[in-house]
Image (cartoon, rainbow, N blue to C red):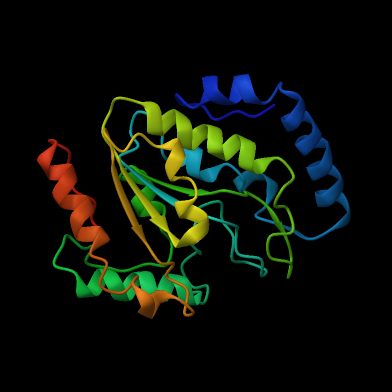
Length: 220
């Protein structure tokens, strides 16, 4: 059984007894037993462990964990300190540097510091087979993570949702844009960053919104 040990627990208690999740759990047991799957089992739900529902101020939606050894750590776009930064993360850093907004004095590829400030770094699919992008797509994860986005997106506490790329933008229907700030742009991958991710101003806009509603800004 999943133990989150914060206010996400009720959500997981409800979801993990549903047929889709029981089927997903059975599938994952077999996958982890016979294949190289990332992230490690104890880090699958890391984003929920580090960012409680009540503390979530910003949601950054990713699609799939990194699929090379040592990269995925249960937080979208993040890799541990010392691991070579994937191109998308490098481009995120470039955009932050270009914006006039609050920044952490020491950049790290480990985005746990964002999570602890209230940034939910949520991939739509939470596991992946080594070298095989999107290998666990369509197995049930999307039902769980769409449910989490919808729970946040219907809540009356105002939040910021960053949707980068067509896949993330497809989740917009789950979010009440009359309550929350929804920021959309192309994805930070090298294929699309120069077509609208660079210069999107999302990190500045996010912090301006947070300050306008009496919340502390994120130190990116």
